[in-house]
Length: 95
Image 1 (cartoon, rainbow, N blue to C red):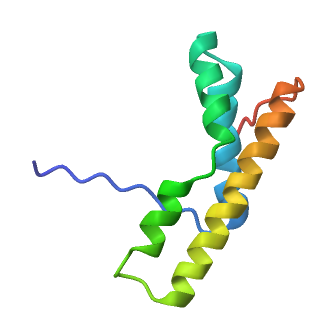
Image 2: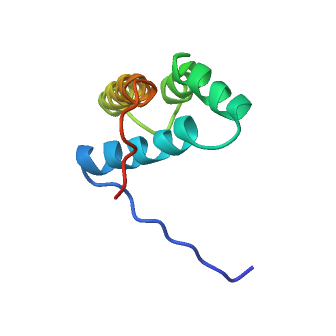
Protein backbone atom coordinates (compact mmCIF):
# COMPACT_ATOMS: atom_id res chain seq x y z
CA UNK A 1 0.00 0.00 0.00
CA UNK A 2 2.91 2.40 0.54
CA UNK A 3 4.34 1.83 -2.95
CA UNK A 4 4.52 4.79 -5.29
CA UNK A 5 4.87 4.42 -9.03
CA UNK A 6 5.78 7.48 -11.06
CA UNK A 7 5.55 7.57 -14.83
CA UNK A 8 6.94 10.67 -16.49
CA UNK A 9 4.47 12.60 -18.59
CA UNK A 10 5.28 12.99 -22.25
CA UNK A 11 6.23 16.65 -22.68
CA UNK A 12 6.32 16.98 -26.44
CA UNK A 13 4.49 15.90 -29.55
CA UNK A 14 7.50 13.81 -30.60
CA UNK A 15 7.48 11.93 -27.28
CA UNK A 16 3.73 11.25 -27.59
CA UNK A 17 3.93 10.01 -31.16
CA UNK A 18 7.05 7.92 -30.53
CA UNK A 19 5.23 6.02 -27.79
CA UNK A 20 2.09 5.69 -29.92
CA UNK A 21 4.08 4.26 -32.83
CA UNK A 22 5.95 1.83 -30.58
CA UNK A 23 2.75 0.56 -28.94
CA UNK A 24 0.86 0.36 -32.25
CA UNK A 25 3.74 -1.59 -33.78
CA UNK A 26 3.45 -4.21 -31.06
CA UNK A 27 -0.31 -4.39 -31.48
CA UNK A 28 -0.31 -4.72 -35.26
CA UNK A 29 2.87 -6.64 -36.05
CA UNK A 30 3.16 -9.22 -33.26
CA UNK A 31 1.02 -11.69 -31.37
CA UNK A 32 -1.84 -13.96 -32.46
CA UNK A 33 -3.65 -12.95 -35.64
CA UNK A 34 -7.04 -12.57 -33.89
CA UNK A 35 -5.54 -10.11 -31.42
CA UNK A 36 -3.82 -8.18 -34.19
CA UNK A 37 -7.06 -7.93 -36.19
CA UNK A 38 -8.89 -6.67 -33.09
CA UNK A 39 -6.33 -3.88 -32.63
CA UNK A 40 -6.44 -2.96 -36.32
CA UNK A 41 -10.24 -2.64 -36.25
CA UNK A 42 -10.18 -0.64 -33.01
CA UNK A 43 -7.69 1.77 -34.57
CA UNK A 44 -10.19 2.97 -37.16
CA UNK A 45 -13.05 3.53 -34.72
CA UNK A 46 -13.20 7.19 -33.60
CA UNK A 47 -12.22 7.70 -29.93
CA UNK A 48 -15.72 8.80 -28.96
CA UNK A 49 -15.22 7.75 -25.32
CA UNK A 50 -12.21 10.07 -25.02
CA UNK A 51 -14.13 12.96 -26.57
CA UNK A 52 -17.08 12.32 -24.24
CA UNK A 53 -14.79 12.23 -21.20
CA UNK A 54 -13.16 15.56 -22.12
CA UNK A 55 -16.41 17.32 -23.01
CA UNK A 56 -18.10 16.23 -19.79
CA UNK A 57 -15.16 17.03 -17.52
CA UNK A 58 -15.80 19.69 -14.90
CA UNK A 59 -12.12 19.95 -14.04
CA UNK A 60 -10.92 21.81 -17.15
CA UNK A 61 -12.04 25.00 -18.88
CA UNK A 62 -13.24 25.40 -22.48
CA UNK A 63 -9.80 26.27 -23.82
CA UNK A 64 -8.28 23.17 -22.21
CA UNK A 65 -11.13 21.06 -23.57
CA UNK A 66 -10.52 22.35 -27.09
CA UNK A 67 -6.80 21.64 -26.78
CA UNK A 68 -7.46 18.15 -25.41
CA UNK A 69 -9.87 17.35 -28.24
CA UNK A 70 -7.38 18.59 -30.83
CA UNK A 71 -4.55 16.49 -29.37
CA UNK A 72 -6.78 13.40 -29.17
CA UNK A 73 -7.82 13.85 -32.80
CA UNK A 74 -4.22 14.32 -33.97
CA UNK A 75 -3.16 11.21 -32.05
CA UNK A 76 -5.98 9.19 -33.61
CA UNK A 77 -4.99 10.35 -37.11
CA UNK A 78 -1.36 9.48 -36.36
CA UNK A 79 -2.45 6.08 -35.07
CA UNK A 80 -4.40 5.36 -38.27
CA UNK A 81 -1.48 6.51 -40.45
CA UNK A 82 0.95 4.36 -38.46
CA UNK A 83 -1.33 1.32 -38.77
CA UNK A 84 -1.61 1.72 -42.54
CA UNK A 85 2.18 2.05 -42.79
CA UNK A 86 2.69 -1.07 -40.67
CA UNK A 87 0.21 -3.06 -42.75
CA UNK A 88 2.18 -2.10 -45.85
CA UNK A 89 5.22 -3.87 -44.32
CA UNK A 90 6.62 -0.81 -42.64
CA UNK A 91 9.10 -1.10 -39.81
CA UNK A 92 8.09 -1.02 -36.17
CA UNK A 93 9.22 1.89 -33.99
CA UNK A 94 12.21 0.83 -31.85
CA UNK A 95 13.22 3.49 -29.34
